[in-house]
Image (tube, rainbow, N blue to C red; front, side, top):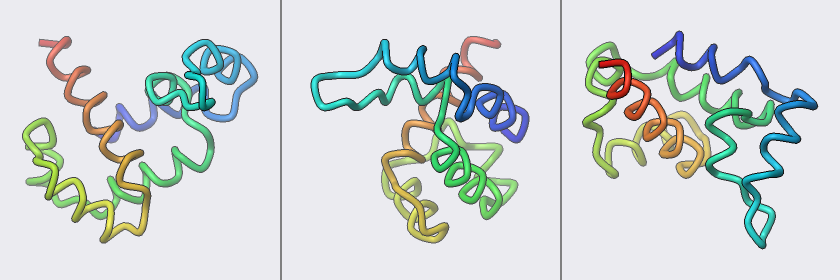
Length: 99
């Protein structure tokens, strides 16, 4: 999981990343899917904060975390639950596509 966080950080607050993200914006300017490729510095900081407080068991079973567990971790970390949920979903996709 830590390696995935660092992978996300490659294009955090990067001009190329911002251009990439703009392609995913909806009519409200949201770009949730783009966050998985180019998080803002704030989003990356929130993700790192949540991952830092996760137990090894939570990290190992991250693909199976339910909504309540995701909410609890986000609340405990003091971060936006939506950002953390998108991260967990992206991580699950990454794990499943790796095999």
